[in-house]
Image 1: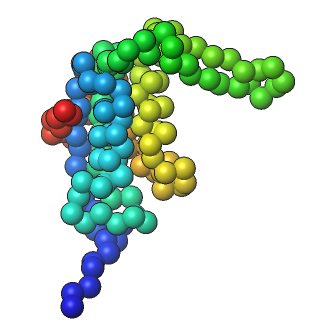
Image 2: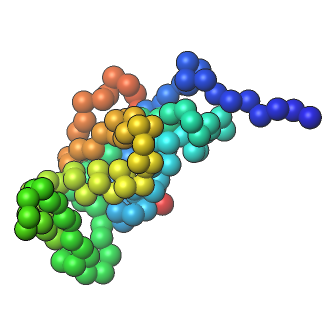
Length: 144
């Protein structure tokens, strides 16, 4: 019987991927990105090691939301003081912070641990077509 091999953090080889978010539903994009960040698409996935790859998301301001979510979907934040709950709908968030919706959707799908925070640091989201990571020669990753 053959034992399963566990990956060491020194043996991880990371790739760079770029995803064009134009006209892709937010949830579908976020699940694909979270899977790549955590390394679950790799044959050497190890749960306790950050074996994921780097992901660059471009055109985050052109994502798609279905139904009435532009008006109905709420994003909350709290100042920490009594009565300090603030809310914005998705349209207001997109106007003021075009990358925040993608960042929060992906962050919510990662583990809430130190390992999850480490995975989240490999995500780069840009509202426009351009990004400063050309030297890493990222591969295009399709999201269906």
